[in-house]
Image 1 (tube, rainbow over the protein chains, first blue to last red):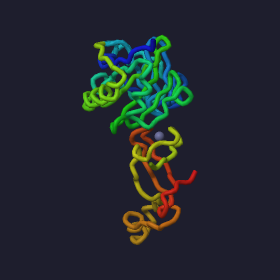
Image 2 (image 1 turned 180 degrees about the vertical axis):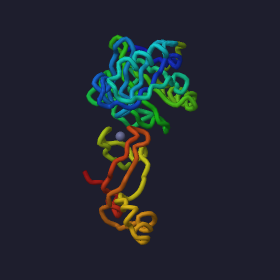
Image 3 (image 1 turned 30 degrees about the horizontal axis):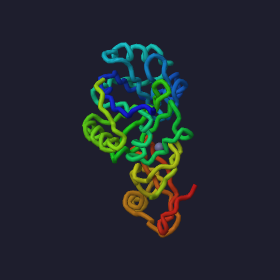
Length: 169
Length: 78
Ligand SMILES: [Zn+2]
Protein backbone atom coordinates (compact mmCIF):
# COMPACT_ATOMS: atom_id res chain seq x y z
CA UNK A 1 0.00 0.00 0.00
CA UNK A 2 1.21 3.51 -0.79
CA UNK A 3 2.50 5.58 2.10
CA UNK A 4 -0.40 7.58 3.62
CA UNK A 5 -0.33 11.34 3.34
CA UNK A 6 0.54 13.28 6.46
CA UNK A 7 1.33 16.84 7.45
CA UNK A 8 3.76 17.43 10.30
CA UNK A 9 4.52 20.71 12.08
CA UNK A 10 8.31 21.16 12.08
CA UNK A 11 8.30 24.81 13.11
CA UNK A 12 10.27 24.07 16.29
CA UNK A 13 13.32 23.02 14.28
CA UNK A 14 16.16 25.54 14.41
CA UNK A 15 16.39 27.73 11.30
CA UNK A 16 19.45 29.86 10.68
CA UNK A 17 19.61 32.14 7.66
CA UNK A 18 23.01 32.88 6.08
CA UNK A 19 23.34 35.68 3.51
CA UNK A 20 26.36 36.65 1.41
CA UNK A 21 29.53 34.74 0.63
CA UNK A 22 28.21 33.25 -2.60
CA UNK A 23 31.69 32.03 -3.53
CA UNK A 24 32.29 30.32 -0.22
CA UNK A 25 31.98 26.88 1.23
CA UNK A 26 28.20 27.12 1.59
CA UNK A 27 27.75 27.61 -2.14
CA UNK A 28 29.93 24.58 -2.79
CA UNK A 29 27.90 22.53 -0.31
CA UNK A 30 24.45 23.53 -1.53
CA UNK A 31 24.19 25.73 -4.64
CA UNK A 32 20.96 27.64 -5.24
CA UNK A 33 18.15 25.15 -5.73
CA UNK A 34 19.80 22.24 -3.92
CA UNK A 35 19.82 20.94 -0.36
CA UNK A 36 22.35 18.71 1.33
CA UNK A 37 22.40 16.78 4.61
CA UNK A 38 25.45 16.78 6.84
CA UNK A 39 23.83 16.22 10.21
CA UNK A 40 21.76 19.36 9.73
CA UNK A 41 20.07 20.24 6.45
CA UNK A 42 21.79 22.92 4.37
CA UNK A 43 19.34 24.51 1.93
CA UNK A 44 20.41 26.65 -1.05
CA UNK A 45 17.48 29.04 -0.66
CA UNK A 46 18.68 32.00 -2.75
CA UNK A 47 21.64 32.60 -5.07
CA UNK A 48 23.38 34.18 -2.07
CA UNK A 49 21.31 32.80 0.81
CA UNK A 50 21.23 29.54 2.72
CA UNK A 51 19.03 28.14 5.42
CA UNK A 52 20.40 25.68 7.93
CA UNK A 53 17.69 23.47 9.44
CA UNK A 54 18.83 21.72 12.61
CA UNK A 55 17.37 20.14 15.77
CA UNK A 56 15.32 22.39 18.10
CA UNK A 57 17.36 24.61 20.41
CA UNK A 58 20.61 24.37 18.46
CA UNK A 59 20.71 27.90 16.99
CA UNK A 60 23.77 28.99 19.00
CA UNK A 61 25.70 25.92 17.90
CA UNK A 62 24.73 26.39 14.26
CA UNK A 63 25.67 30.09 14.26
CA UNK A 64 29.06 29.27 15.82
CA UNK A 65 29.66 26.50 13.32
CA UNK A 66 28.79 28.65 10.30
CA UNK A 67 30.93 31.50 11.63
CA UNK A 68 33.89 29.17 12.20
CA UNK A 69 33.54 27.72 8.70
CA UNK A 70 33.41 30.97 6.76
CA UNK A 71 36.32 31.71 4.48
CA UNK A 72 37.06 35.34 5.29
CA UNK A 73 34.22 37.09 3.43
CA UNK A 74 31.44 39.04 5.12
CA UNK A 75 28.29 37.07 5.79
CA UNK A 76 25.15 37.65 7.84
CA UNK A 77 24.05 34.82 10.10
CA UNK A 78 20.65 35.20 11.76
CA UNK A 79 18.53 32.87 13.87
CA UNK A 80 15.17 33.01 12.09
CA UNK A 81 13.64 30.03 13.90
CA UNK A 82 10.65 32.08 15.03
CA UNK A 83 10.17 34.02 11.79
CA UNK A 84 9.07 31.09 9.63
CA UNK A 85 6.56 28.31 9.71
CA UNK A 86 7.98 24.94 8.65
CA UNK A 87 5.80 21.94 7.85
CA UNK A 88 6.58 18.59 6.31
CA UNK A 89 4.29 16.99 3.76
CA UNK A 90 4.99 13.26 3.39
CA UNK A 91 3.35 10.47 1.42
CA UNK A 92 2.91 9.05 -2.03
CA UNK A 93 0.29 11.71 -2.81
CA UNK A 94 2.44 14.64 -1.63
CA UNK A 95 3.39 15.71 -5.19
CA UNK A 96 -0.28 15.62 -6.22
CA UNK A 97 -1.10 18.00 -3.37
CA UNK A 98 1.72 20.38 -4.35
CA UNK A 99 0.55 20.32 -7.96
CA UNK A 100 -2.80 21.67 -6.79
CA UNK A 101 -1.30 24.73 -5.10
CA UNK A 102 1.73 25.71 -7.21
CA UNK A 103 2.78 25.93 -10.86
CA UNK A 104 6.21 24.29 -10.49
CA UNK A 105 6.84 20.88 -12.06
CA UNK A 106 7.30 18.48 -9.11
CA UNK A 107 7.84 15.38 -11.27
CA UNK A 108 10.94 13.31 -10.51
CA UNK A 109 12.87 14.62 -13.54
CA UNK A 110 12.37 18.30 -12.63
CA UNK A 111 12.34 18.16 -8.82
CA UNK A 112 14.34 15.15 -7.58
CA UNK A 113 15.22 14.40 -3.97
CA UNK A 114 17.34 17.29 -2.65
CA UNK A 115 15.83 19.88 -5.01
CA UNK A 116 14.81 23.28 -3.64
CA UNK A 117 12.56 25.90 -5.16
CA UNK A 118 11.01 29.14 -4.06
CA UNK A 119 7.73 30.07 -5.66
CA UNK A 120 4.10 30.94 -5.00
CA UNK A 121 2.18 28.32 -3.06
CA UNK A 122 -1.53 29.10 -3.09
CA UNK A 123 -0.60 32.74 -3.66
CA UNK A 124 2.00 33.16 -0.92
CA UNK A 125 5.78 33.09 -1.26
CA UNK A 126 7.12 29.83 0.08
CA UNK A 127 10.20 27.65 -0.19
CA UNK A 128 9.98 23.95 -0.92
CA UNK A 129 12.70 21.41 -0.15
CA UNK A 130 12.26 17.87 -1.40
CA UNK A 131 13.65 15.76 1.42
CA UNK A 132 12.46 12.15 1.02
CA UNK A 133 12.13 9.97 4.10
CA UNK A 134 13.15 6.35 3.60
CA UNK A 135 12.18 6.35 -0.05
CA UNK A 136 8.84 8.08 0.57
CA UNK A 137 8.16 11.41 -1.09
CA UNK A 138 8.50 14.20 1.45
CA UNK A 139 8.68 17.99 1.20
CA UNK A 140 9.60 20.65 3.72
CA UNK A 141 7.54 23.79 3.19
CA UNK A 142 8.70 27.10 4.60
CA UNK A 143 6.77 30.37 4.69
CA UNK A 144 6.56 33.56 6.71
CA UNK A 145 5.09 32.78 10.11
CA UNK A 146 2.12 35.09 9.61
CA UNK A 147 1.03 32.92 6.64
CA UNK A 148 1.57 29.63 8.48
CA UNK A 149 -2.00 28.90 9.47
CA UNK A 150 -3.20 29.80 5.98
CA UNK A 151 -0.68 27.46 4.37
CA UNK A 152 -1.70 24.60 6.67
CA UNK A 153 -5.39 25.22 5.97
CA UNK A 154 -4.75 25.21 2.21
CA UNK A 155 -2.72 21.97 2.40
CA UNK A 156 -5.40 20.25 4.49
CA UNK A 157 -8.01 21.33 1.99
CA UNK A 158 -5.93 20.21 -1.01
CA UNK A 159 -5.02 16.95 0.76
CA UNK A 160 -8.56 16.05 1.87
CA UNK A 161 -9.16 13.91 -1.21
CA UNK A 162 -6.03 11.91 -0.30
CA UNK A 163 -7.08 11.45 3.36
CA UNK A 164 -4.39 13.72 4.73
CA UNK A 165 -3.61 13.32 8.41
CA UNK A 166 -2.05 15.84 10.79
CA UNK A 167 0.82 14.67 12.98
CA UNK A 168 2.35 16.65 15.83
CA UNK A 169 6.09 16.92 15.62
CA UNK B 1 -0.56 32.58 -18.49
CA UNK B 2 2.61 34.51 -19.24
CA UNK B 3 5.99 32.91 -18.61
CA UNK B 4 9.17 34.81 -17.88
CA UNK B 5 12.53 33.06 -17.92
CA UNK B 6 14.67 33.92 -14.92
CA UNK B 7 18.41 33.30 -15.37
CA UNK B 8 18.50 31.71 -11.90
CA UNK B 9 15.18 29.87 -11.72
CA UNK B 10 14.15 29.10 -15.31
CA UNK B 11 10.68 29.63 -16.78
CA UNK B 12 8.20 30.86 -14.17
CA UNK B 13 4.68 32.25 -14.01
CA UNK B 14 4.82 36.03 -14.47
CA UNK B 15 2.78 36.38 -11.25
CA UNK B 16 5.97 35.63 -9.32
CA UNK B 17 7.59 38.81 -10.65
CA UNK B 18 7.18 42.52 -10.07
CA UNK B 19 7.38 44.81 -13.07
CA UNK B 20 9.91 47.55 -12.35
CA UNK B 21 10.01 49.54 -15.58
CA UNK B 22 11.77 50.15 -18.87
CA UNK B 23 15.52 49.76 -18.71
CA UNK B 24 17.20 53.15 -18.95
CA UNK B 25 20.78 54.19 -18.51
CA UNK B 26 21.25 56.56 -15.60
CA UNK B 27 22.90 59.74 -16.89
CA UNK B 28 26.05 61.05 -15.23
CA UNK B 29 24.61 63.37 -12.58
CA UNK B 30 27.52 65.81 -12.79
CA UNK B 31 27.11 66.31 -16.54
CA UNK B 32 23.43 65.70 -17.30
CA UNK B 33 21.34 68.64 -18.41
CA UNK B 34 18.05 69.25 -16.62
CA UNK B 35 16.24 67.93 -19.69
CA UNK B 36 18.25 64.71 -19.68
CA UNK B 37 17.68 64.20 -15.97
CA UNK B 38 13.97 64.91 -16.29
CA UNK B 39 13.79 62.41 -19.14
CA UNK B 40 15.55 59.77 -17.06
CA UNK B 41 13.21 60.30 -14.11
CA UNK B 42 9.87 60.79 -15.79
CA UNK B 43 9.75 60.02 -19.51
CA UNK B 44 8.97 56.54 -20.86
CA UNK B 45 9.05 55.26 -24.44
CA UNK B 46 6.00 53.02 -24.12
CA UNK B 47 6.18 52.03 -27.77
CA UNK B 48 4.20 49.10 -29.16
CA UNK B 49 7.52 47.44 -29.98
CA UNK B 50 10.26 45.33 -28.45
CA UNK B 51 11.30 46.92 -25.15
CA UNK B 52 13.93 45.98 -22.57
CA UNK B 53 12.39 46.00 -19.13
CA UNK B 54 13.55 45.44 -15.59
CA UNK B 55 11.61 42.87 -13.56
CA UNK B 56 12.13 41.61 -10.02
CA UNK B 57 11.70 37.92 -9.18
CA UNK B 58 10.00 38.61 -5.88
CA UNK B 59 8.59 35.15 -5.17
CA UNK B 60 11.72 33.39 -6.39
CA UNK B 61 15.41 34.26 -6.26
CA UNK B 62 14.74 37.94 -5.35
CA UNK B 63 17.02 39.05 -8.19
CA UNK B 64 16.43 41.72 -10.83
CA UNK B 65 16.45 40.59 -14.45
CA UNK B 66 16.08 42.08 -17.90
CA UNK B 67 13.09 40.94 -19.92
CA UNK B 68 12.74 41.85 -23.59
CA UNK B 69 9.01 42.06 -24.24
CA UNK B 70 6.89 43.24 -27.15
CA UNK B 71 4.48 45.74 -25.66
CA UNK B 72 2.02 45.17 -28.48
CA UNK B 73 1.77 41.39 -28.29
CA UNK B 74 3.24 40.47 -24.86
CA UNK B 75 5.69 38.09 -26.58
CA UNK B 76 8.90 37.60 -24.62
CA UNK B 77 12.27 37.07 -26.28
CA UNK B 78 15.06 34.79 -25.19
ZN1 LIG C 1 14.56 33.86 -10.19
